[in-house]
Length: 128
Image (cartoon, rainbow, N blue to C red):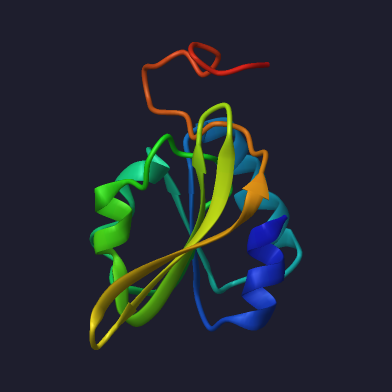
């Protein structure tokens, strides 16, 4: 669980899961392990968590065809987001916000599962 690792490093962790059953299972497991600094939400990760933003850091663990505008808006001042971008061919991108604006850096080729949008078939348009 990435949230558990991050909870050891940060004061608060916010995690979004599209599948409610997976979120509930993670909540139960992490609570049983004593984690109290993780906030959970069920929903579309690409839509972010506007009520909790801005964030110092955002880690996206599924590939988006393009960087979701909503997520990019949630990167706080001097914050950063790392996200796999692309469909068949993907690259890990680092997005940093600073005093001179937002800067994108292409890091390396990667292969992640697709970022699933509610109501859409995750297999359509993506190789298995």
